[in-house]
Length: 323
Image (cartoon, rainbow, N blue to C red; front, side, top):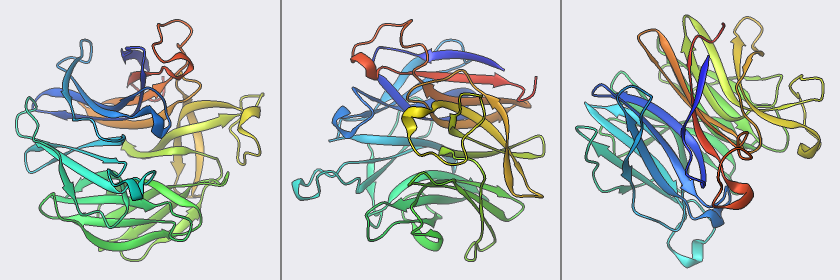
């Protein structure tokens, strides 16, 4: 695959997604001073006609801290969704507000609208049969879990089902295939992720525990196969950890893995150029070519940093998964 840095300005740029709309490519990410909440992130959307030259198309108003933007196309509009720290001092430290903005032409975006989010983080958005499905999570100790919501108008969301209850579940991505939904669910506490599978109307889920630790989950289909991508941790021999005792003893990378649907396990396919704080992929397929966005710090010593050790760049991998 061809991999290039499409955005480096010396800040911590992270948590990506990619889409194509009205003939242009769009990548969104969080622009901040650090990964942590103290980084006071804001949301950027960059745009390109050819994936070679990129420019800033939209910067959303600064909130106490904005994170994890996602792109989606719905009813001929390009949508951007992200969540943010509450502006209520009593709720400081909680990501309890979710915002959506739409653009009809890819040039001008509406002011972000705060939607009802049931005290959940809306993490990934998918449009299937002109219905928006949202993978959401709650990370408070007494209410952990990952949940599915849906919307027919793009602003009001209704609860559908619980994908994974508790079990340290949080971030999740969705893939729809012939009315079957695959949910790729991250679990904390050094656990491997879960792949949950449900048939329409997506109320009953069958869950499979995966064999490798993957964080920042992304799931997609390419040439008939299902792939997962995210942050993995390598042993000294290059193998991916199935359990992590201490993250300082392993090397973080962004990786692509194939889902073996017969055995319901993950098989490594490709390690992308990456390192340090990295992962959070998005992908699209255009003219049978795949484009995968992600962020990484592996070139931090080669590039200028305005935030010390926190600088990271936005990268775009394109081409074939298997060379």
